[in-house]
Length: 243
Image 1 (cartoon, rainbow, N blue to C red):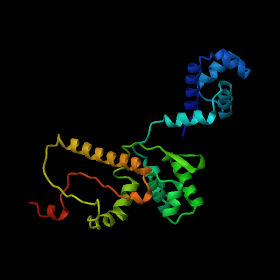
Image 2: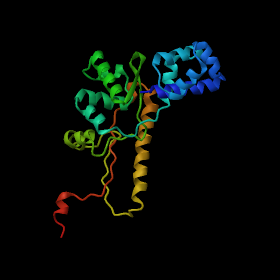
Image 3: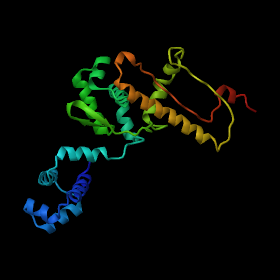
């Protein structure tokens, strides 16, 4: 969510773009120039005042707020508290996973037993948590970076390990486009991070392809879940046999 300080910074930038002086702005607002300078320097004022300044400058407040929001850095990771809020409700977790895949409200209510009111309620919660920015007509902007991942030891991954991991690997991985690889080997510690980077690239490629294929008809797309992992690990039963 954009702060007032962010909006004021955007207003000051627009002033320069429009080549509008503080004196011009002060005159239009019916204020002293010194008061306007002090107000903008402080960067803290009521939103009604920001709106008034926007009107004087011929700007749409909603458009300015949207531009400021779009310029905010995207999140690569949530806080533990944010993740706890997500897993506290199974339906909220479901909607969170769906918005990560850029599902629309219509897709949510069509695919799952969620009423429109329920789905909107969960979108509002995700907006409050900070995962999306909810926009008019129940559209949203995802506030997560392409390199986003759940915290390795956070609430969501703990939930996945406890409730979904065995269910996922219980599958045969023998359907169209499916597969599982188990590769073991000893490599240089110096080279290990480069393999992690390649795995990250595969994940990003998958995410980009997902976005690109949204233009296809729903009948031409199939949902897949990609799990990539790499760790220094030995099967517990084997470790028990070590001298």
